Image (cartoon, protein in one colour):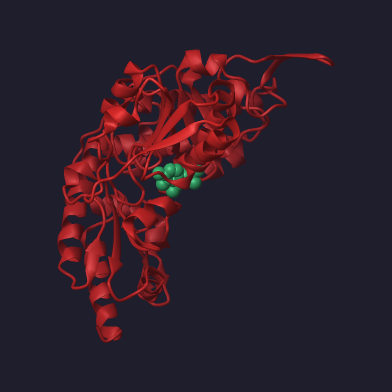
Length: 425
Ligand code: PLP
């Protein structure tokens, strides 16, 4: 598989090959690990995913053969580094549906991408009395910047509620999204409930009222084929590390007209055209938003992650995750005392499975599973307002990715049953 991916470097996606899980798992060296005598079972993919050897090797190769600062050098290494960095941008633009690479801005992650919009577009465009619409299932990254902006500008923060089943409740949507709406900021896929939200539909409604739409794609782009143009959104944010790539690389897609009209975010080198002691003009897109030395090596290595996903095919990946999510929900629901959050229908959700046990704290569940080599996450998952709506202080969360298999789910289910026996339940 890796050889094939290597041979494909810079070639278009072939996709739709049958999934060979054994070969895929063999590409992830970390999965071989034995921790405290237990084979590692990694089910914390919504937090971050593991890296295939091609990505690890791409980082090493970059530092061994090409390392130099980009854009500003005239020597071979600087030119090569610049070419590789810009190549990833072109690849990202293609991966999200064929946008103009100038509309792709590299940031440190989804959080920084959303903050960029809040501090630039938000500062300039949100005025007193304007309405910002979010949903009740937002990650703090797509919530705190808007709470703070609304406070500062005396704007109003409105929210789309969720139903008992974990979908967005659209029964009063025409009272929530109105002509006063200046921004709709919503997650494409919930990191707690797994719900896939109707972004295109809600964007169309927001657009009727002239609002700007930002979607948080941190949990969506890694798992679904995303075409930002057909979604119709103005801004779309996601992170490399949740899709096999390195940490420290985020992507902000923004429509050119908006990005061009926005002031810059980080000021310094690389983002200017001309500077005198009393006057500065900004560089063209995308440089205007990439002040300072960026995370070159990790952006370069992200290209290998994109190739890897394309080789598998996003449709194959999605099918595999739907099958495995179905299997997991079926088996987890059969455990007495366990309550699963979010929609049941796998077509309407991703492989993020949050659950609670009537008798045990999620932290105890996670600690017990860790003693069996199983990595999940427990806590509020950076969604405290959602937790309070669910009436929970925390949940345990198992989240899947392309290398997970039924044996991982079996290990989880067996350990959870063992845990209940251990605690005498
Ligand atoms: N949005 C969602 C839905 C997430 O799940 C996460 C991370 O878990 C983020 C935003 C923040 O991503 P990052 O930490 O990469 O900035």
